[in-house]
Image 1 (cartoon, one colour):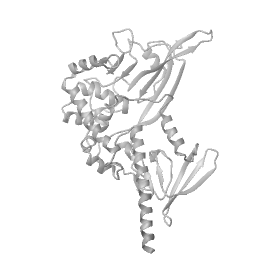
Image 2 (spheres, rainbow, N blue to C red):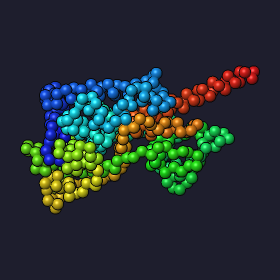
Image 3 (cartoon, rainbow, N blue to C red):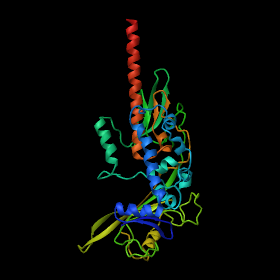
Image 4 (cartoon, rainbow, N blue to C red):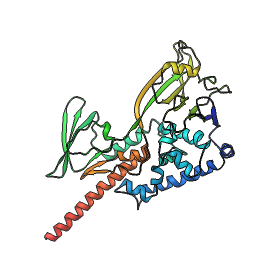
Length: 385
C-alpha cells in the first residue's frame, strides 16, 4: 500500500497498490478535470522539452533561445501554482497531489518552483534505477570513454593562455602533489560555486541558490506508528509524501506541520542477532529541511528513547536541489572560447538526465567547433596551394 500526501495532521489522499485502473478512476472521481488536465499538460510540456534531445534542435547554442523556440518560457517564468491556475488546474489536486510531488522531488512548495520543473516532478511514471546505484551509469560511461581518470584530485585553478588560445589547468592530488596541463577545451561539469576553482580569466557563471536537504537513513525492526500519523489502520504505508494543510499559507516556503518532505521504506533487511536468530528490519529514508534527530525517529514510531529501536543510522546534509525560481533567461554553456559549463541547465530542469543532456550538448558543440576549425584550415591550405 502507498500513501500519498500527509498534511501533518491527516492523510488527504491514498493510493493503494501500484496505482492501477481502479486507482485512476478514484482519482478522477475526486479531482475531476484537474486530474485529466494535468496529464495533458505534463504530456504537452515535457513533450516540447524532449525535442531538445534530437535534431533539428540538438545541439543548441543558447539555452535561453531554445527555451523560447520550444515555447517553454511561459512555464519557466511563472510559479508552479500560477502555471497550474492558468491551465485551470487547482485545489485540491494541486495541493494534495502535485505539491506532494514537488516537495519530495525538489523540496519546494508550488509557490516557489517554476512551472516547468513542476511538470517534470509529475512526469515520473516508468522511472527506473540501476541495481547497485545510478552512479554506475556514469562510471561506466567514463570507463568506456578511455579517458585518463584522476580520482582524489581537485582542480584548483584555470587560466587562459591568450597566445595559444588554450587553457592551463592546475590540480592538486590528495597527497599534495600539484599537477598542471594545457588544454584546447575545458568543460566545467559541476556547479562552479561549489568547485573551489580560482581563476583570473573566468567570469564566474551565475550563482544558483540551492536548498539544504537533510537525508536521514536508519534501520529498525519497527514500523512507523499509526498514532503519530493519526492513521485509522494498523499498518502505516511504505511511502509517505507531505503537503500543506488547507488552513496554512499556501504560498509559504516552509515545510509546514509535517516537518519533513517525505519518509519511505527503501527495502527490508535480515539481520542476524547475537543469539543466531534472524530478524526482519526496515531501512528507512527521511528527507527534511532540518536535521532529523533520533528523538524524532522514536516519536515517529511512538517508542521510548531507551527502546533500542535504531540498529543503524546515517545522516547527510547536501545541496541536492536548486531553488527553481521563475525566470526567463538562463546561463549559457559557452563561457569563453574553449571554455564550457554544463550546470546552467540546473536552473532550467534539475535531474541526472538533464545534466547528462547538457553534457551531451556541450560535447557536440566542442566536436562541431573542432570540425569547423579543421575545415577552415583545409580551405586556407588549399588557397595557399
